[in-house]
Length: 304
Image (cartoon, rainbow, N blue to C red):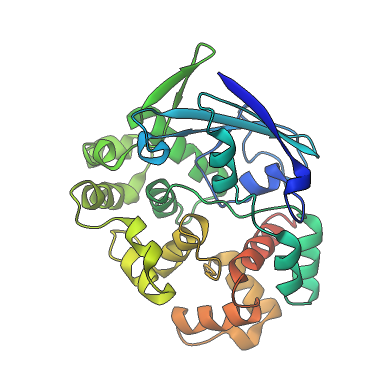
C-alpha cells in the first residue's frame, strides 16, 4: 500500500472534494462511510472517497484502488499504486485554474450564488466508458439511484481488488458488460435501459466504436459520434463530453438547466436542443460554459 499528500496550495482557486464527487458529475466513486449523495447541498466534508481503476485506465495489467480525503488544506491519499498523484490530478482536474475560470463566468445572481456556495468544486475527468454507461442509466433518475445502479453493475461484473480485507470493484470493462444478458441487467434494476447498456457495451467491445474516439474531434462532431451509441441522445452525449472527454464548453440540457433557462435566461430558449445549447453556452461564457453549468446545476438541484 502507498500513501501520501498533495498540498492544496498547488490547486489554483481552491478545492472541495465533497462538492466535486457528490454533485452529480460522477457515479464511479464511493464514500467510505457508504453515505454517498445523502448530504443535501454536499460541500466541505472531510470524508474518505475511493474508486477502482480498471487495467484499461492504469495502462498496466493491474486493477488499482485509489482513495483520498480533503481536510481543507491537504489532499491525503492511499492507493495500491504509487502513481496515485497523477491519477488524482487527472481524475479530479486538479490542474484547472478555478480563479481564471471564475473570472470568465458571467456576472449574474444565479451564477454568482452558485460559485459562492460551491467554491472549490472542480469538474471530473472520468473514464469514458464508465461515464457513458452511467449517463445512459441516468434518465429520469435521482443521483442517489443512479449511483446505486452503477455500483450494482460494478459489484456484479467488474474486476475486484481486495484492500484491508474488503473487496472493491471497478466499473466493468466493455467485454464484461457485453456478456451480460438483458434479463440479468434488469435484475439489477436497470429496467428499460438494459438493452441500451448491453448494445453500447457490445459496440465498444467488438470495436464498432469507442467514446474515446471523440477526444480528437470538434465539439459538434464529438457529440454526433457519441449519439451513435444505443440510448444516447444529445443530453447524455454532452454529459460524457463534459465529465469524461474534456469538452469544457459542453452544457447538458437537463431538467435543472432547462429550468434555469426558463426562469433566468429565456432569451436562450430556441426551437431545438442544438440551438438552445449553443445559446446557453454563449450565455455561460463559451470556453468554460460546462463549468458554469455544473455550478448552476448543483446550486439549483440542492437549493430546496
